[in-house]
Amino acid sequence: MGRALSNDLRRRVISAVEQGSTASASARRFGVGRSTAIDWVACWRETGRIAARPMGGDRHSHRMEAWAETILGWIDETPDITLVEMQARLRAKRAPSAMGTLWRLLDRHAMTVKKRPDTPRSRRARM
Image (cartoon, rainbow, N blue to C red; front, side, top):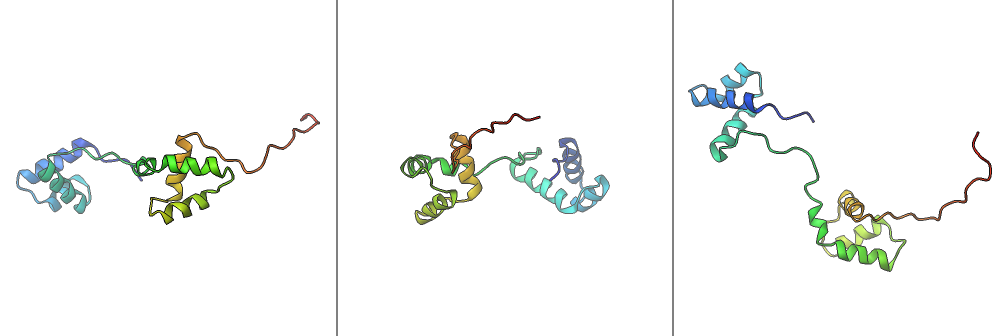
């Protein structure tokens, strides 16, 4: 996904529409999509906002924080629990259970799970 278009361009499109041009004509004039111009004008009329909303980022992990204590407790009880097992337990409780969201929760709490012990170091040095 690309970047948001500039606020200057947004202002010019909205200004043209406010001066009597149609959104479609303004879109053609400034080289943006018709639906884009319509959306910008509608947003400006409803909220007065010209700037684009923030793009990307994690917007859903905060839902898992409510379950953090429970999930971390499961890990204390069963150190070899897998993400799939945690996800199944969350689904049974009708809690948010997306794998990525669960992974980010564990990452934020510095929880790394390694299933097998470290292997012994090689006796031979690398050449």
